[in-house]
Length: 165
Image (cartoon, rainbow, N blue to C red; front, side):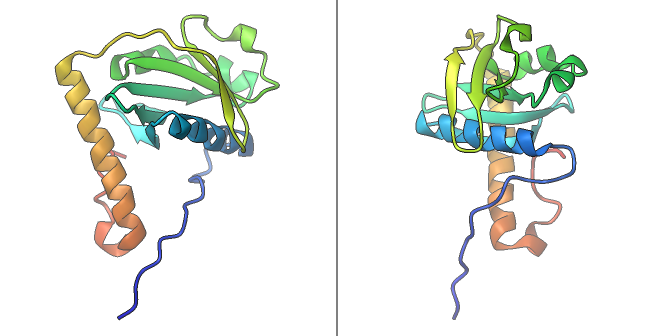
């Protein structure tokens, strides 16, 4: 009998993310993990929007991190306020050369690259109500479990990722 070996996953490339965005994602997820957070990239929310990173903290807090790779990316995307109803804290993650003064002050700020990240400004907390928290946690858990299943059994898990998209 042979044993399956799980290989580390490279960031998902679906043609929407630039190389810079992928690198910011890796560094940001490393930062989150160093603080005890589990994270899922590209999580589809109940609204149909897709969070760049959804993170679950050790005490059950939910963070959404929106990655912006350049000024044009930020200026053409006005949907970020819609994410607040699905998390306790909302932050932007950007590369070090991003002009951070254009980002809203009422959000968290993370500077990141492919190797790591720094939390520059903590996001203000706006706690979710219990029913919304449960719904988001279930979506997070189903997506994470579905993606893990895909690693071991791609054919058996096809179509059952559980993240709504």
